[in-house]
Length: 328
Image (cartoon, rainbow, N blue to C red; front, side, top):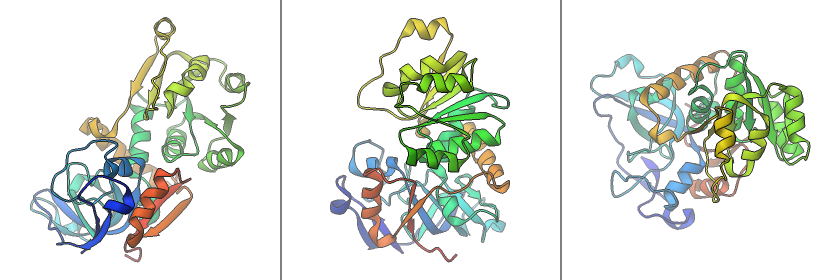
């Protein structure tokens, strides 16, 4: 099969190659998936570059955690009826050789999630890391029905998924953005209340929507945004961070204590198994109900996997996908 492969860490153009490698066979509890699209996330280029260390399972690595495709073979212990099933994938490359930037990947059966017929392969490949991260940020501390959620960075992939999953769960959603163009993206995701966090009146605007404060904050930039978060968060609420900035946040411990706030941190790779299972179930349910829609998508061919990684590293808006075999 054809696959993007790297053997050393470094810049995408220097270490990623398109090669013919052996097509893998599924082992016990695994399925093999014929890949339609491979999704590229920041974690993929960071792992490939060596910016973020992850264990390597072999002398080579096929990158990318997310994707979509069709199950074409099952391993021992997996129901043969899964063959031919449309699926979306997550965590394909974690501690495993075969990520999704290839014609085929093998993956544990419970990480190949049935893709509802009304959801496109492109949308399926856009889920994975962003949607599962968003789900954990939203629901790690309980249900959202009747709550108010603030999603920082609503124009991003995680932000978009957080907006849509929170709305599906019955929450009132406020999103912060940094520009009019990003405000349009947040509104396209479904956010009715969008505030430019760079405005001097940002806290007042959020408080006008949520006078008692917001119940949960999904935060992408805790060092930059913590002051705004503390200005608008309700007592006994949660600020949930899923990304890190170079500079650490300056914590006002007494203020956090006085208001009994929870400051939670989320990393996909160390989430408990039950959180993955609930995320997969809820995301698929939202897909079937038509409540999740794709972000703006930029597509690269498999032969340009290095360019796709560079686009994500450069801050591409929306979702970057690698087209492998879209016709399946």
